[in-house]
Amino acid sequence: QKEVEQNSGPLSVPEGAIASLNCTYSDRGSQSFFWYRQYSGKSPELIMSIYSNGDKEDGRFTAQLNKASQYVSLLIRDSQPSDSATYLCAVHTVNQGGKLIFGQGTELSVKP
Amino acid sequence: KAGVTQTPRYLIKTRGQQVTLSCSPISGHRSVSWYQQTPGQGLQFLFEYFSETQRNKGNFPGRFSGRQFSNSRSEMNVSTLELGDSALYLCASSLEQGYYEQYFGPGTRLTVT
Image (tube, rainbow over all chains, first blue to last red; front, top):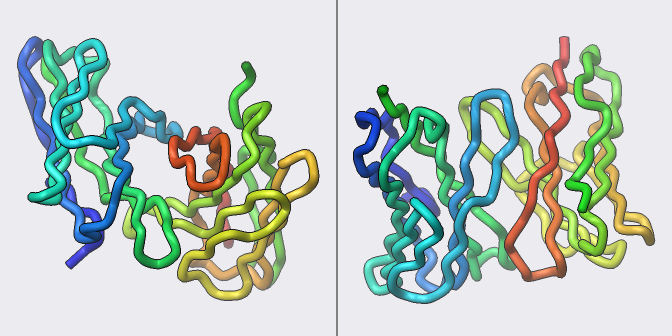
């Protein structure tokens, strides 16, 4: 089992729809969770961090965390073509001395 | 505040050579991490430096090394380059060790021929 797993994608949604990106992790002791957005040819950009169970909202983005299920998700409301990018889930692991482990990423395409 | 800067942005080397990449963190950030990104393996952790000491290391061979200076700037070195070392090398800085909101630089694209 990979330490951090994401839907392989690509995920295609129409403009204005809600995009739902999912991530599961294996280290039950993990405490910090992040979503990064990476445009093609660019470096990852931090867009959300979440540390407690429940929802955290920032503009059109909502991160959801369920530690019991070892699951974190990112919802993008009113998706725009400019949201088209690869979204990376990152988890701070307690095992192995504590590292930030990234999933393989989910490619999102928002169609006008 | 200026972001993370990395130099050079692009590099072409031949097998067997060595390379040094540089990273300047965001002002006030004291922790620097390095990652390798390839299409097949994704983003993989190389190492983390804080207070001029390597605090954590990923599963890479000893050909990959790094260091951090007293001003928090960091360098990574790859010796005896192999074709498989071709990748985007990313540096990320964070405020303190264990504070994992990391901010990435633009990366150095290394091509080994």
